[in-house]
Amino acid sequence: MSDDNPVLDDEFIQAATVTEPSARSRMLAARWRRQGRAPEPQPWRADEPPAGWFFSRPRRWWRRR
Image (cartoon, rainbow, N blue to C red; front, side):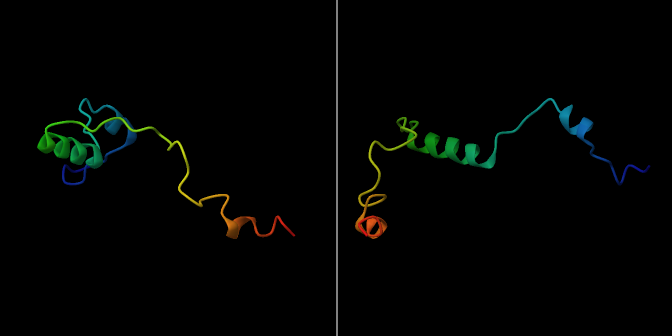
């Protein structure tokens, strides 16, 4: 096997000692550095669904029949 075509198998990849953050986490970290602060924590779900999301008239017209 020549050095021009290295084989990157799973064992080689898992043996790496350095891990890099994802592109999204790098982008968010750079944005927070520019803003000077991290964002406030947000709840995973909103307290209330958007207006008319589930029990709106178009979805329940069939129930009345």
